Length: 185
Image (cartoon, rainbow, N blue to C red):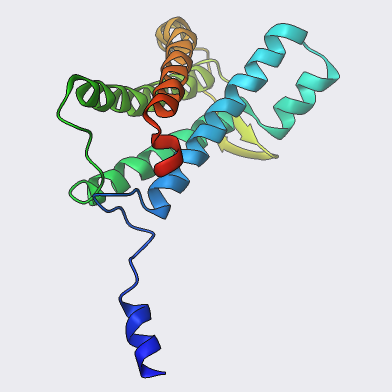
């Protein structure tokens, strides 16, 4: 019995990153972010294809775009804090061109997720619309429209979102080519 206890104490800590594998927390953040980003694009695509229908209205009630954007911002902040705490023990990309590109693209993911969500929140606020989710008002809208805030948010939110989708598609292709999707995630 005593031997079993000492062996269990020696088991690897699976929730933290190691130089050989991402831990449970990193993988959970990754897949939760992936699910929410793909949900956002799915709902937007349905609106573009179908217009305002009972289906798109239902999708918007189940997955409110602004609330999911805010959630993505919070999760991205959590990911950044977790990355910082694990930066010395997580797997490192190789010191090759491909490894440097991976580092750049992952940095772009974080920057785009924060920027797109911030621009979306600015659009909501500047348009005077409160940000609501499931009957709760999360952020009040401005009392008056503020076009000076609305213009840059309107110009950048959508194009940066499509850039994010393009990077996600490239990320998926590279993960499949590199076989990393099966090993680490």
